[in-house]
Every structure is written in C-alpha cells, then in structure tokens.
Length: 351
Image (cartoon, rainbow, N blue to C red; front, top):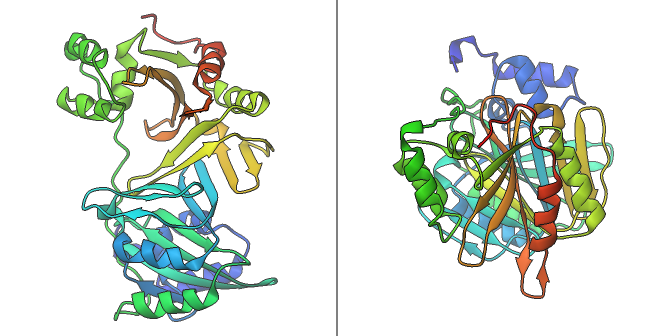
C-alpha cells in the first residue's frame, strides 16, 4: 500500500465520524486503507498500541474471563464465546486449547495489536484487535458484560508499547495464492495420498510436489475428492443442523485458525449471508462467495477423515468442516452420509 496516497489520521477519523454505523472492515475498504490504519488513526482517543506477540497477548487474555473470540476471512466470520486458557507457545505455531476457544496461532503474522474502546449507547465496548503486516485482521477478542475490567486495565498497562503515535505503517497486501497443480506429479500424488496416516501430512505432500491444496484437489479425482455444487454449502449447514451431529468447523487466515467443535442449532439467512446463531457460537458465511466446494477424504490411523472445504474465486480457503469423532460421541459415520448426499458440481471433471 502506498502510504503517500493514504488519508491522514485526521481524515480517517472524520470519515469514521460521518459513518458511525458502518463496519470497520467496510469503512476501511471504502477509504482504500487497511483496517489496522483505520484503528490506529484513533490512538490516544480510545485506542492503545500493544505488544502483538501471542506469547504476551494470549496469557493476558486468559485473565479477562468470558470474552468473544473472532477470526475471519473475507467470506466467513467465526465467533466463539468462552475463556482463553491452555496456551501452548511455539515459534512457528502456537495453540490455545479450551472446550470453547480452540485456536491455531501463527506468530509471524501477529504484527500489530491494539486495545480498542468504543463508546456506545449501552456503554463502552472493549476489544483486543490483532493485524498482520498488511493491516488485515488476524484475530479479535471482544469483552462481554461479565469480563474482568480490572484485568483489562492491567493488560493495557503491561502490554502498552512506548510508541503511542497515531497512524500505522503497513506493508503491501500479499495476493491470495491461486490453485497450483502439477499434472505430471499426479501418479505420485495419488500414491502418496493413499499412504497418509494423518491429515497434517497432506500439506507437506503438496509442498513436496510443488502444488497447493486446491491445485491438488482439482487433479486428484476419485476416491480422494469429489467437486460439489457451490450451493451445497447451504445444504451442508442445514443437514448438520437437522441431524444434530457434532462437527468441527475451521475458519482461518494467515495468522490464526479458529475451530468450533459441536452441533449447530439455528440458521438465520439474511441476504447473501447464512448465519449460525447459537448461544456461544456464531458463523456468518457469504454463500455467494463460495466458488468451489470439495468433498475430500484423507486416510488416517483412526480411519478416513472426510471434510467439506469451500474456496473463493481467488482460490482462498473459506472454511473446512469435518465430522467430530470422540470416544462415545462419534459423529463421523452420520457425517459421511451427509457428505455423500451432497450434489456433485455440474461442471465437475470426471475422475
């Protein structure tokens, strides 16, 4: 992003004041800036710049009590209510593992963080907001009515950075990597795919064969993948709701993956959005931005892992859904039947 063409913090604040009800991401897009620049224009006016490293930020968040965790991509927003805890640091990947808030964190992309307070009709709304180098949102933590405000004050005091100047310099946004296939490696892909013992081995296999996830799906064929009709994303959510089975729903960006484990109960469509509106879990999905939908099967030591995975028109991953398999609560057989019943894409390439 060319900083010379960006509006000043004063201009950004004026635009925000003129559009108080516009969502931050939408307003940033309207202004041609990143969301981090929008937030940082208010430093000193309800915004505090913080140390963004998850090794400091997540343990501090654990003291806040009940909060709402939010991770999103352009076409999907994943929200979970709970408490942070059980943090496992790691230089490349870290984790937060509680029953409600289950995250995979990639610290290299936690570049900017702010404590944000917005005055509202019902009182102040407080949140922690983390952004990557380009200023795109990685993860947000919204305080709730029962959150510990004394812990919030301690967090702000302990994590505040010396530099509290308004504004934020950001790097150019990296484009989404489109599908990468290597048809000359198809035989090796299928042979090695059949030998997988863990789903985490798949991306390493793709990298070794100079492909990526979507590129591999496009050429693998049966029995490994089946391309579904994009509209089946809505049918999938309806079937999970109606069956009462437990699933794992993954939504992630470069810096954070957030996971819901359990059933879904309430679907409330609104325009192009399909919305899961359950106590403790909300999902907001832009159905019209699902360009490709795939049913995928990978062998593991515990049996086949079947997923449904959605991609946008640029090839970016929107969400993944798996059947939840826990001792005494194994929803995988019922999940497999749901996936099997989903309609195949009319333009799917025969295996």
